[in-house]
Length: 84
Image (cartoon, rainbow, N blue to C red; front, side, top):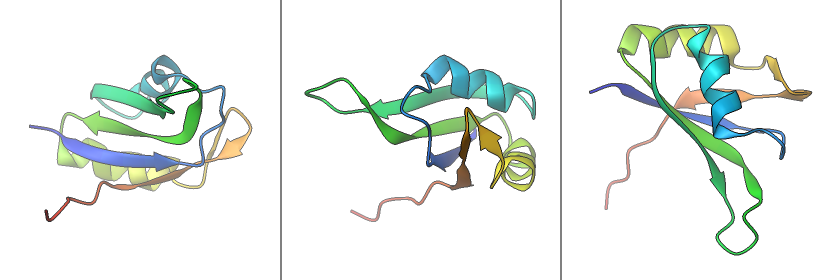
């Protein structure tokens, strides 16, 4: 199983496909999803990317955290596991 990353401060125009292709430049990307509002369908400004390996995930954090994607400086961190 891969390593999931949280990606914050996304432009509201960023799609899941945009997110996936951006992270594929770093390493093998298993999945990417921009989270949308249930009622409006509009992006909530964050998403999740799953990298195939922990090494690719760490590289993505190093190389993409604080960098620009579609005019916004994105935040890339390891996804926190829920304890419930």
